[in-house]
Amino acid sequence: MSRERGAEVGATAQWSDAASGGPGRGDVDDRPREECGVVGLFNVADAAQLTYRGLFALQHRGQESAGRAYVAASGRDILVDKGMGLVSEVLTEPGPPDARLAIGHVRYSTTGTSSLDNAQPLLMRSRFGPMALAHNGNLTNHAGLRRTLEARGAIFQTSSDSEVLAHLVAHGVAQRWLTALEGGAHQLVGGFAYVVLTPTSLVALRDPHGIRPLVVGTRGGGVVVASETAGLDAMGADYLRDVDPGEMLVVGEQGLSTRRPWGPLPAGPTPCAFELVYFSRPDSRSHGQSVHRTRRALGRQLWEEQPADADVVVGVPDSSLPAAMGYAEAAGLPLDFGLVKNRYVGRTFIVPNQNGRTDSVALKLSAVEDVVAGRRVVLVDDSLVRGTTAARLVQLLRQAGAQAVHMRIASPPYTHPCHYGIDTSRSRELAAASLSRPELLKRIGADSLGYLSQAGLQAALPGQGEWCLACFGAGYPVPIPPEEELAPVEGGLP
Ligand code: SF4
Image (cartoon, rainbow, N blue to C red; front, side, top):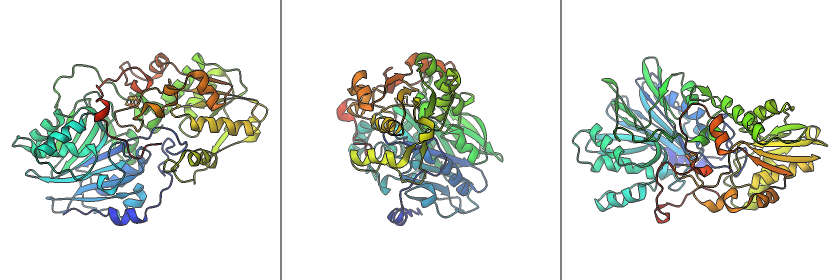
């Protein structure tokens, strides 16, 4: 049987700041929101409780809903706990100590509404038996797939794109479950990572371009997967490797095996650069180094390209602090905490109107007069998406007596919406797409504004490979659907 405790949890949940110590979800108000985070465990003692720990570490990737699915003591069925709210609010029970297989999910909706129906994991029953799945990312072809499946009689339980894979499995012609899953995966297009649970197996699946992250580790002889290495760390697992782009990693009683639903890949991977700019936790590792180290490199590169005549460097807490550190190092300027964050203010992206949103910045961040008064300040932020927060921060620094404020952004202008699982699906939301540079400078009220270049971003990112830089105007690595195929983004910003 399936247990869905969400209705009661959702009725009492209070929205509050993510408690994970992640890179600052909710520090500012107009950043893109991460799509989701996933974990999976196979043959690991106390898997249900460890799922809680893994999700807690990934809380920054989604704060609307949380859930886990685990294999019951009978070994024949899957139980689900999920609800609206933070991990600590939803998963209030430790879970059965004898569960050894589990998956988990935290969600911020990018397609589908923010409701309990769409909370994950999703539990499906088909001729193959029970199957639970959890998904991070976005399927760019989900609207067409859904129409086709509905024409074949599929009845969708959610408005989320995640469910498409379950119906592709159920409606596939294959006689074996794994073959059906592989055939279903083959039809998916976009940026995505899935974890899939059956009573006897765990599958981890990553899109052929490797846009969304997924890593695999081991604990006590079992297998653990997570969206970020920080999730593995929290579950006491040792990192083994990334799940390869286009890989379907199958973990079962026979051990580990790999399938390639998309066959040999025609192009190299293009992982999401914005994961390293902003989304991922600074203590996660990517391409052999910590995200923190990468962000410092971005800050150093930013100084090379966009120096400023200033007395002190101030970073926007928390996610921009490593870039500010790198900028200060390269510039030979002091780094100081000219902005402090009130960690006890509730999340601001549910504030319903622009006035409320702007005011919430002042509630959440304040300037330290001792640090900035009478000084020329370089204000370093990791990204500038909608621009409203930047304007308010510049105003706060000026009110605290800053003589000049030079805004420096440790990524290129964010000019294009993301269609691979981030909540910026409309160009008109993006300040750099709708305003000229002088107009943008006027909007934020700084003395100067400088961005990192695309080439500078690529130079500072680790590894030799390519990256998805589509939101920075470098072209979409996966074709995006025509406008009419795009589902409205729920939970995004006005
Ligand atoms: S478009 Fe931007 S946010 Fe979206 S996957 Fe590519 S780099 Fe990441």
